[in-house]
Image (cartoon, rainbow, N blue to C red; front, top):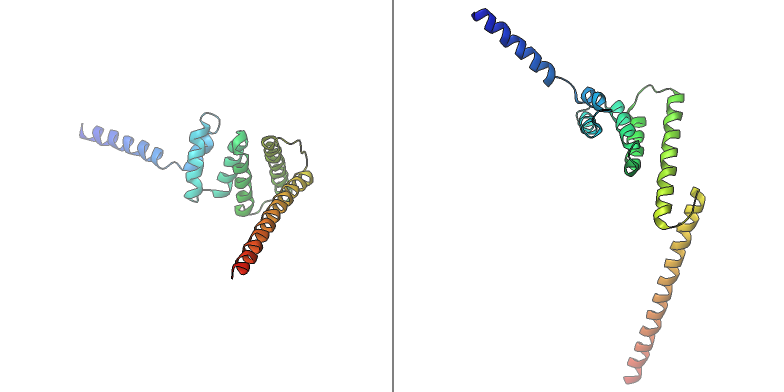
Length: 162
């Protein structure tokens, strides 16, 4: 009877150790389709634990790419993947860089929609931002000019009183 209890205890102990010992990376990959939020949590923990960090960043980018509000985060994870992955082929690097460019275009389009403009390329967006900056500078110069004139008039009035 005592032997049977020892065997049962060892079975429970081994099964518990198997569950506890599972890495966050493996758990995250397994949950990507069934529970993306939990998978993201496990993969983030894998990055913190340095448990297959490059691939964890890659899979986090895949999860973030599925949600429109997380496109910038997907770009960041892809850039971290490129920085930390060792031995990537030129073809793999090119594919990831193209993916980053597609995400950045999507981000640019989202920004344009929020601004209420119909700007489809990066050059037009930069030009629009420079034009807005020039207008703000012109207004600032006008305000400084008015203030300068007021101060000169106040100084002239002060000299007249003396």
